[in-house]
Length: 270
Image (cartoon, rainbow, N blue to C red; front, top):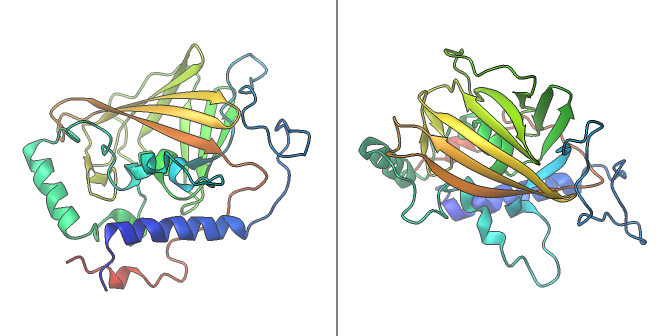
């Protein structure tokens, strides 16, 4: 059996939707409500005690948010899970070796994606494009992202420390953040070599530095600009724009890739 990209995307969306539908329904504290009790996600973004924007909450990538009656006119914007640079004119500026690698990986329908082997999928998919929910917990001096996928986590230090010069390579890298007005600017380095940015196999190497700019537009929506500077894999830095949507009145659900896993043996590529 060969899983095509479109089929895989549909499978991921259905899996996430089914899991979230089975989980608890309990009113999230602190959410502004409409007169009928429904969440008012268009309300102003919340602030912390020190007046900073509060990014806390349970967030979903745009492709998985529930569609209103009549459908989601901009749902196609969520293609970054399959191709992180799909919205860039001309596509991602791959180095020649990287372009050949992506071509080979795509021809094999992404069967060697680390995620299919129950390995970490890397921080960009974990934080912004994966089908599973992620929870942001904002503390003084620290922002933590907890993810449903394999109960993973990511730390972003807000205490003024610099990026390390030679950090221990890891899947999620080493992240520091600072405020620029109402936006949190996050810089990350120290990546493990050989990561996939997307299901197409776009690489991220140990030479990369990634900058994210997170801005909570209102209570229910977050805009994220991601700039990747990886001269080993790309001919120039490039930036994509992403969106996250708040998921009220529920919570994270345990997910472990290897638990009752029966799919990997069927991912045969061509």
